[in-house]
Image (cartoon, rainbow, N blue to C red):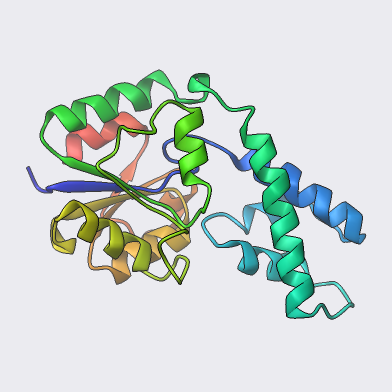
Amino acid sequence: MKYRAILFDLDGVICHTDQYHYQAWKTIADELGINFDEEINNRLRGIGRMKSLEIILEKNDKNYTDDEKNRIVYQKNEIYKKLLLQMSAADLSKEVKETLIKLKQMGLRLAIGSSSKNAGIILRQIGLEYFFDAVSDGNLIQKSKPDPEVFLKASEMVGVKPKDCLVVEDAKAGVEAAAAAGMDCAAIGDATKSNLAAYNLYSFSDLLTVT
């Protein structure tokens, strides 16, 4: 095998929570009287909460203090966490589940590398709470993607050198983070447009052909 470990982004790769992020940010934006639509929401993929808020506030005339911004992102996350409770094992596709099982049977170390601080909640809701060998998420890092910290932490947690890890990402920021970590990346979804990944996946099960 080319790799000893595979590090997965969570949202957009293992499962999809875009709709919940959108609903939560939309609620906040409406309360603040700020325009927020799907186009703006797409710019938030793969980046942290505070950077997301900065994008949302770009065309707003009011200057918010750091305390106000912290309160806003806290409120957004509380709304988002409540929405996540709607998720279930049905949100994990058969293809993803079967591919993950096959990869583990091949002897590969599998880990999550997500900037989200809610990775634990999501994994529990979709039935993968105890599946991965390690979960590197926003609770363990200081810098969000495209900084490589989350992937470097994941490789450390599974005991595999960066050069022997393959990252699976659906966002450009994640592909850039993988490159900065010295890891190959398999892009899926919108990330395939970045032209930065070693592989472009047309379906999740394509992973079985590149490992």
